[in-house]
Length: 144
Image (cartoon, rainbow, N blue to C red; front, side, top):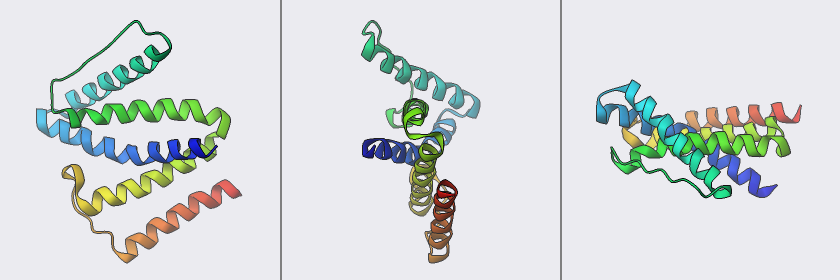
């Protein structure tokens, strides 16, 4: 189960990262709608690649924008695949708990450092306390 916890934490950390990357892709190409389409095209490619691990008959490559902007699609696929794989054995609530915890950590870091062209919002003591309170709230709901 520890590997499942790490996978779900990683999935949670990736969610705000994918939002920031996809927004940057939208700015790069000048169309949020096309960026959303590309996100799912990339997610399809990752899911197809995962499927190819058990059925090695296909390969997909995309390269129409800077590679790091395509990471958003890879993160969508990772989330969907990991939650689909882990929730049945770990429980949906427990899996989502770790996703949410990862989201809080990742979102705070993205905002604090302005990664992926995000608006900078420093991690103050008050914000840190709020994030800790949110994390505790999610934890309490799983223990109730």
